Length: 335
Image (cartoon, rainbow, N blue to C red; front, side, top):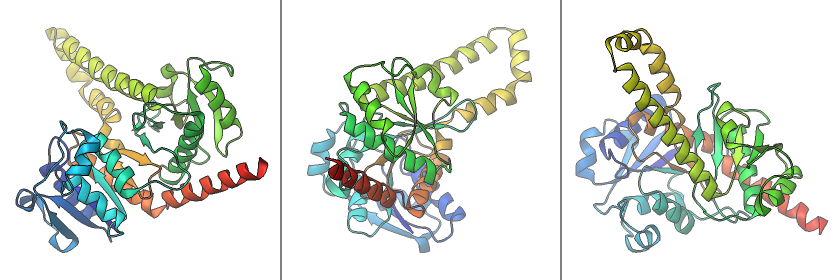
């Protein structure tokens, strides 16, 4: 298996990206990687030269670049060349911690969509109280969505959760303003009706306050609402840890208390750590594309690589393609 990696994407590139790739080569037999980026900057961190191919380029898409324009104009950017490796069949999947919009554009314009999928979905795995986690999609690949798009998100999310995360018959919830069947706007009401007939284990509507308690294994929503939910969760977690730190450092008494629960707080922080869950998958594309967090360290990169490997091993893309073909064929036959 070969994975293409944008070594220049992210806040800590190329050191953490390349180091994470080397950790993956240490742990995963049969894996080879193609690192795309500035060879001079990458070389000091490469330790498995026999299993690493380097594609040199000094062109990079930055966070300031307009995504679509950058992908079309910067043909030799590390992110674009990475996607080209997948398109040409030289790599089975690709990973980048760079510009999210540019990666989505490269996914659409270079890698291409699965036939029958109208729009891809950006889908991170988020923590839950029980430690199992849940998949949230879409979190921003598409701001607007139609009921048919959310139906496709539910199918893709269910397949990924079962195949990669190992959860049998995962439950699918529809993010809404209430759990009652008739709640929501026109989008959620129509989506609710579609999901009741879909080949997924639909658990009904779920509220945002319940998703971290593990009320559903897959939570489906439009990109606008999903991005707000994601950023709210991230912001709340950061604020709570900041408030806890401030409280524990406020007096000698609380400092002593902090010392007593230090290991417990460390475990809690690890439970909420994004690096434990890999990256966000761009579901609906013709090959696995993983968006790693912009601040990814080597551990996060390692887990993103494992995530991509599992998607390839368990043929997630093929299963999505076959399921969508069956759904569309049944729809045509019923009309």
